Length: 522
Ligand code: NAP
Image 1 (cartoon, rainbow, N blue to C red):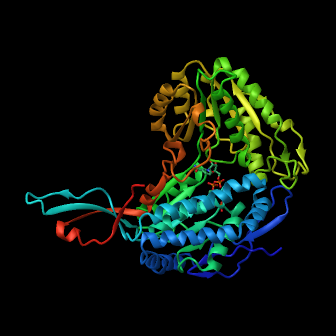
Image 2 (image 1 turned 30 degrees about the vertical axis):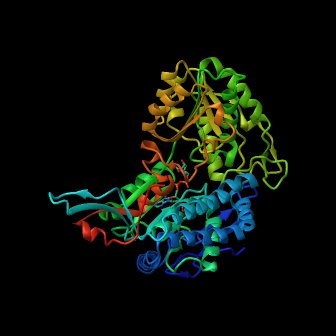
Image 3 (image 1 turned 90 degrees about the horizontal axis):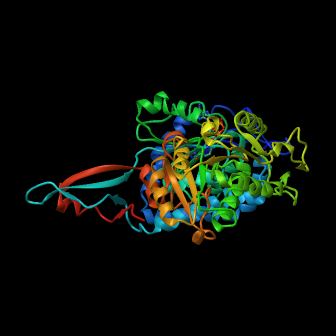
């Protein structure tokens, strides 16, 4: 087995080094690829991206860079069968779960290609109208957005090797900023293959896209003033990154997406038998089982009126019993494995921890697994826990179990439900299900301050809503507090991170010479 994932830096594939990490098939335990450790040539590679990559990208208009994204999307589309095979072998996902990552990546790229095209010939973005600063009206201040002068480094988590790259790279490249991707080692193969395909297709200028696989050592030390850094992963690693000397010294702009204890609230009006109740139950089961619960947006805390606690537990339990778990190569299997045996251990330990304060209502640990060796495969069936008195919960608001695990929490009144949702101390998303649209709107106002996204679901949008956990490029993704304080996507707003806002103070006649400009309004 010699599938060594080489680094691509300074427009060239770097020599194979000593294999340090082995990537495994999490279902069979077989080795599928290797990477080296600390990368050589980081500083030279970063410098090449900042000089040659940025220069070539910024020589283009926004419209031309949008067309470039279309070409990238075509490359991914042409190679998608290989991506599904890699996702199966390295992430242990069913075809449907691989699609969340792979098709999500293509959709997001296509979206930015489309909204980017609307900027046409623009080479500069303006922020609002000029402010007049002199009595004769001539001296004015025009705020502009110019691409940052550095590069964008992405340090990604293991759960979205495809989408995690392209949801960040699309707005960065559209902004004219070169990208260095460092995927999580355990699932780096898919990211690597996508970069390799795009490099081979020669659709990006040299230096626009680089990849570093294996260790992260030296990555942050190579950052310079004007670079930007996006991190997705655990809160512990996020804390290391925030306090890194180079990040602090050079004022590197950092975006963090970290742990999140997302919630979903069933409204008091949504009794069993109502459409809102059924929508809630389906959404909770979908969130627990999609990608084996390994989505940063998954529902971890399910808040329900005390009067409906038993009915929800029963309805969710019945659906979970029908979920077959095991080898995703088997046609009978609906949910595959976690990404690694390490995650398996972490999820098992997390369930045991939550069970010290909550009751196990549906125990996935008792469920048979299909076509796997349970001593080898990282397969965990979904587990639902519950707390009849939500005020007694502590761990459930603090500890994210990154797998197919959720906890039902009974609330006494709507005010308490809001307080419990806030106890995530900042989350990526909450969803609220009710037919009472006045109450939904009020709940949206109440929860906006502690959430990046608030999904208000009334039965009229039951069939068309895009889903609690699906991160759509039209809406912002990120959350305050524990969720990392970051913000991505949200249409053209996503470009803001890769631009610097500057006030140009000049005569109105000078400002008129700026050439074609666009705005970040969608
Ligand atoms: P992690 O251990 O923090 O690793 C994330 C990334 O950071 C990996 O690429 C890792 O590289 C790298 N890394 C580790 N130590 C580093 C250091 N000292 N300096 C620079 N980079 C370093 O997280 P994970 O286990 O992959 O991801 C799971 C967690 O991510 C979950 O807890 C989940 O809550 C969170 N998550 C959040 C979101 C979100 O959008 N909010 C999305 C997905 C996941 P190696 O793989 O080489 O160690």
